[in-house]
Length: 265
Image 1 (cartoon, rainbow, N blue to C red):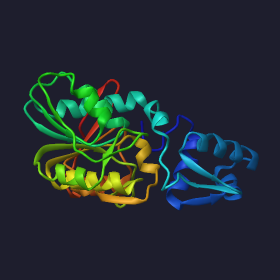
Image 2 (tube, rainbow, N blue to C red; image 1 turned 90 degrees about the horizontal axis):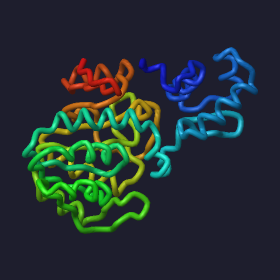
Image 3 (cartoon, rainbow, N blue to C red; image 1 turned 135 degrees about the horizontal axis):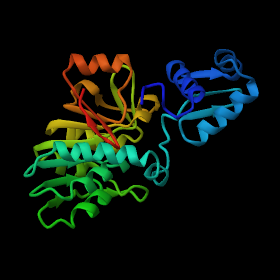
Image 4 (cartoon, rainbow, N blue to C red; image 1 turned 180 degrees about the vertical axis):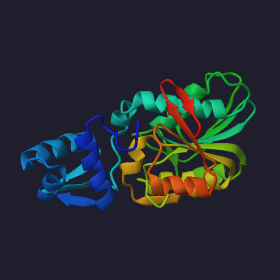
C-alpha cells in the first residue's frame, strides 16, 4: 500500500494528504482541488472526522486534535491487523535473553502478546496492561514501577516511575507515538507519559519504534524525540519523502510489516 492509499478511497486519501500538508483547509478550497461538490466534501469530512483522522471545523477541516488522543477502546480495534503484523516483526527482531523496556499503548500491547513465546526476557514496563499479558510466561521477569495508575489505559506515571526506569539499562525499547511530523519529530499527547518514554529512550541501547501509517498524518502536542534517534522503524507503510530522507541519512532500519510477511527495504 502506497503513502497515498490510506483509506482505500482515493478521494479521501487526497483530502487527508491536503490537510496534513496545510494544517487546515476550508470546504470551498477542498471542493475545488478535489473537483467535487461542497456537499461531497462535507460528507467526506464528517466520515473522516468520525474515524479520528481529521478534526471537523465550521466551514472546513484541520489535522486531528493535537491534545486529545483517540479513546483507548477505539484504538484497540483500529487497524488491528496492521498492528499485529508490526508487533510480530518487532518480536522477531528481539532475541531471547534481552532486557526490554515497553511503554504504553495498544500497539505495544500487541508486541507483548507476540513476545510470549520468547525465553528469558526481563521486561520493564510502565503499563499494567502489558505486564498482565507478560507475567503469565514463567520464563520472564516482569517489573513495573510505582507511581500514579491511570484508569483509562493502565499506565503508570510520575516521578517515582521515572526514577525506577532510570535505574536500568535495557537492550531494547519498544514504543509507539501519537504522531510523526515531517521533520521527524516524535510527538505524544500526554506530558507525563512522554516523560517516561523519554527516560526509557535515554536508557536503552536500541530504540524500536512501532508506527502504523496513520501516525504520518496525525498531530500531537508533546515532543519526545526524533525519528533520527531510532534504531529501527516498524511500519505497515513507508513514510513520505522527507521522512525517508531522515531514515536514510541516519541509517535507521525500516521494517515494513504486512499480513503476508515482513519486508526490510
